[in-house]
Length: 226
Image 1 (tube, helix red, strand yellow):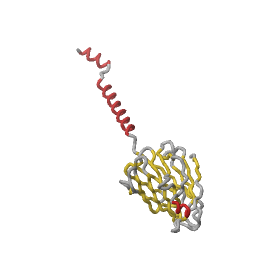
Image 2: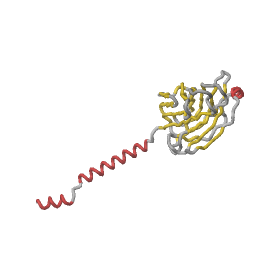
Image 3: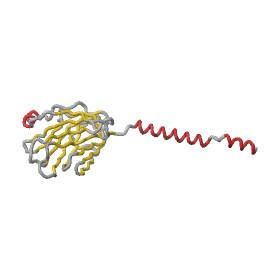
Image 4: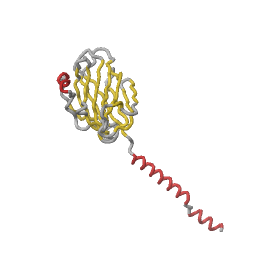
């Protein structure tokens, strides 16, 4: 698996809180899918809030990270650096923008052992919406290190706010980083469905034509009998 690595500078949370911006630096549009193509990797340092919660912010409502479904790419890999010790419960909050084809699913998996998801929420602000709301048709499932969200199609330009809680369950220190892999899935192309139907219709017509067309031997035998 190939990675395109983009490193984000460490950000001081107190100053970010004052100006209301988290991780103002962002990558260009990130393409991702569940495919086996080359992946983009981005890197973030953990921060601790005034409430003593430790975790990572990716993007902000003002500067969300743009993400597009790209079947030629692999999943988006995030390297989350842990800059404190003695912490076992963390958060991961992301602001993303849907680019291109509408999303219908979003998938996230922690690839480091002894880590699991404990809670999640998925809110959206579609073009024309005034505030963030729960994604229409939202359903999600958390199983240990995997969380999968399903929802009604989210159009291009939708801002997505995903907040997850994660926990280190191992013994000793939690290590220096974890990695999370993420990708969307999209509405199937209607042209693909129509193409398959067209091919099926042509195949059936060809088979019927072969069945209806008499063979030369049959024609000869009919002539002799007459």
